[in-house]
Image (cartoon, rainbow, N blue to C red; front, side, top):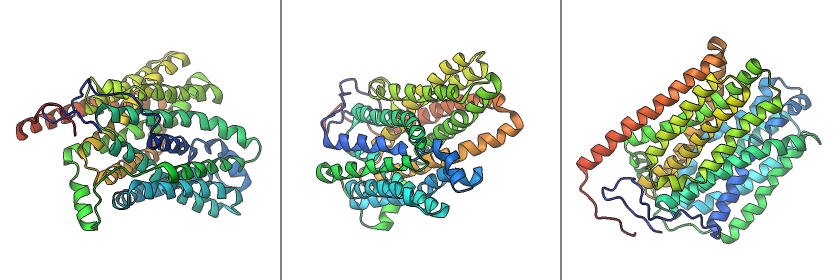
Amino acid sequence: MTNFRSPKGGDAPDSRESVAVPWRSPLVQVVLASTFLAPLGVPLVSPVLPLFRDVFALTDAQASLLISAYFAMGIFLSPFIGMLADRVGRRSVLIPCLFAFGLTGGATVFAPDYSTVLVLRLLQGTAAAGIFITTVTLIGDSFEGVQRNTVLGMNTAVLTASAAIFPIVGGALATIAWDVPFFTYLAALPVGLFAVFVLEDPPSERETRSLAYLRGAVSALAAREAAVLYGTTFMVEFLAFGAILTSLPFFLTARFGLSPVSVGLIVTAVGVSSALVSTQNGRFARHLSNHGLIGVGFGCYGVSLLGAWLAPSPLSVGLAVLVFGAGIGLILPSVDAAISDVVSTRFRAGALSLRNSTTFLGRTTGPIAFAALAMTTGYHALLLAAGVVALGCGLLIVILTGQTHRDRSVAAPEEPGPGVR
């Protein structure tokens, strides 16, 4: 692996680094295939909710637990999964999680009652957390510099593209029967089998003492850096799931009287834009640091939400949310790259598992918070408020990271010029 460091040891980009994705790498193939399966968890089953409710004679709130249960365990268990991945290796966690993800999803077809379905969803969500953590960690272990941004960007692109496809797949399969979409989870089994034969753990130093691991994982990121990166992770998901996936559909329906299909097309535009920009993250990283890309990404969030607030037509809203998707494509790969840059392989899975916990927390709390606030403010005013908050987040990151870099330049001696590790 080649790592070009900036003269002052920060995360400034070097234009000489490769931005190519090594498509023939078995590791990249396993990671991207695993990531492609990840949105099977929620986007695939969202169209099933009304049928699921009717089959088991549930309330809407009870049916929605099909989604909430999937995320619940990941919030709390991700740090322990990360610790396990750092102790026994990424391969030893990813492969069992792929098999568990596929088997628990497929077993839902044969679940006799509502309670059994929820238990299976809890187990499947835990396996999904393991897949999220280990795939990103494997990229962080195996690549450096802007190529790491490139592969992480492609990983995000695959994630968002499949998230846009699977609601259509789930809806089509659900026309056969409510449980038919759950057969799709069995696709994880051949991916797991492929990983058994081709995936190897990148060389890394493993920590076997729990107390030492916990101390190291806590201190792996400086307090200010942790606040910036984990705070960013929470806010990017909180705003996306609260403002775009929850508030925007209600806003479009109330203001413009759009049909569900039209609303779905506008929301899908976010995923398309995110996927396209994510693939270019490595190229952008040649010119801006990861923190700079995060700041620009929040700027996109703010401009997009303010644009939707001002938009006089549905088409204008659709154009505005394209900018929101660009923000996702700039922020998500850059956060993972920034964490991977400053955390050693010894604690990397643990640090990224905390990122996964904050991801799930933002996704869980965003819809609840926005729906509750909208009862007082209405969705139109809420888009304005969310846009202002997003711009404030971008400004805060610029201030905090600027101070951090000044502190480093004072405290740390200059390193030699670009070199190869």
